[in-house]
Length: 508
Image 1 (tube, rainbow, N blue to C red):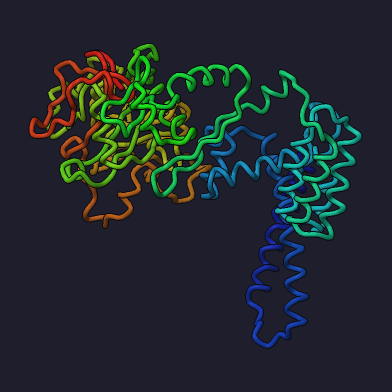
Image 2: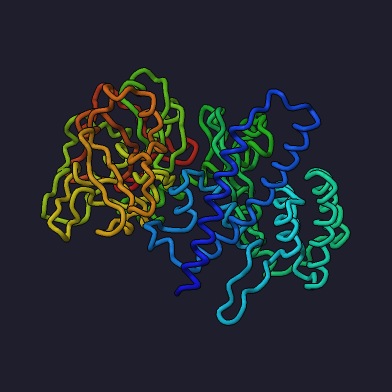
């Protein structure tokens, strides 16, 4: 115990001395320094900047052996770093990945093991390579084919590190790409393990024009499925949104085929949309957090009536209001407009612990997703959380006492962990445990960024007393209140893209 205290004291003292030395550097006058002196000092600072991450890796690795993120009040290490230091989750993920590869590994018994990338770790510890070099080396080693033996892998890393000492990240990347090509010029050998490792469908960040890019690497089985679907629904003349009466069943007429000027990529996009609508309307997708799998959209009555503005889905995607209206034509409840009273019982008090479908839809319209600060999980992945008092402790299942929370965050609310309460604007505030409390915000603005644009005195009133809309297929006990002056649902048309309107108990 004495040795441990002394080591801890030495570490804290060294860090304090480092901060003091930095303060001295920051206070130095630089106006009278010559260019030669400035370049020399900048070189030294750059070397120090390159070496600092190596120390952080060691400390983070040791922290991970000393405690768990749950003991710190977080659901994961990525969550703990993002909350404690107010960094993005992608940056937290990068730091943790570098730590796993570049820090000494803690063995179950005996001395610690060397890092996964020992040459890279050593070069970084001496300030010979920077973070960009580390990123290139890490990705290149990860892309080595599975048949490469351990000795070749180690030599590959050493060669890249030796090169990185003298060149920039661009030249290092080009050399790594050429070396990877020479190692596997014929491409990967067909192998179930390799195919399983590389399969992926990646959704990229939604663009400013509301379009979303997808990148897919499909295994043979997945492509065989979509190959057949595209052969039917992406054929010329099928599911053409420019056709007055689009063909979604049977065979298109010759006129529809001749008038189809879409590219193959556009036809496959429209086929993907049609197949998704058919799947939603089939009623075979089950339930998601208490609601049938369906598209749920929230917007404002002002945007709806003006035919301008946007809607936001339960997954956080932005949809132009014109598309919202078009989608409403395929939904069982059109665009369900909630204005003051919904016609559904939204307060259950102590009668039931589980929120009703009507309450869930209202919470989606109000919160948009998990209400814990920094959490990006949308409404589709969130549960209903008793904010004020847990139901087991006497809480009520009323709308003003409920909020959305993803499953890990919902479980993180404990007497010794996170706590929640509802403020005067019916917003869920989260108070972190002492280990993570640095005075950060108690509200999550990720799903409702428009709240940041309003001054505090113009804060939004509780949504259950204002207007919110949701396109949903979930029936409610008495049916939602509908604004009869606006009914965007057209007459059922079996030729409409995606098929006819859904049955009474389903949703598109």
